[in-house]
Image (cartoon, rainbow, N blue to C red; front, top):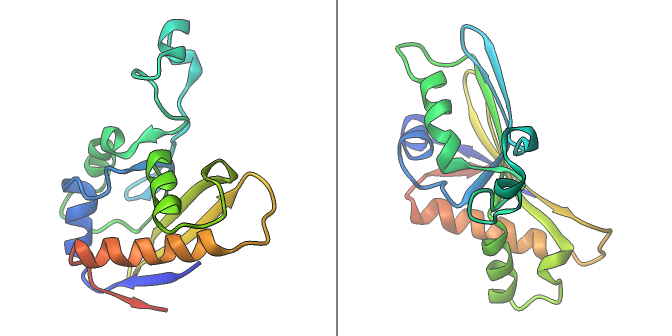
Length: 167
């Protein structure tokens, strides 16, 4: 687990909300505080779908909503002349990317042992921080997936030219 403070918040937010840089993620949870506090539970709602849609992997391929689908809603809640008081997003890397990261690093941990590579994005009114995390289906002694994910997040930010300080 690492904690990274973003140097240029405006540039990060532009890529996060207006661009497709984070479209390889799923939204688990969002809390956005502006004139109200808005909370979004990212878990797909079974009651909304027909039985056929619920079982269809193309209509609903993941447990959580894809960031690219919910991003416009979050953008509408945040945009405006005033900066939000705070926000917190919990994102999961899409499972296919989890498997490819582990395979690329040639780790002994199997993709089905990792529940999620998690990215917490927190803004407190002054600073924007990213915190990585790894969720497992069961206890593992091997912490290699944590290191793989931390390295991947740094590489991702560097590739997107998002400057940060490790804190």
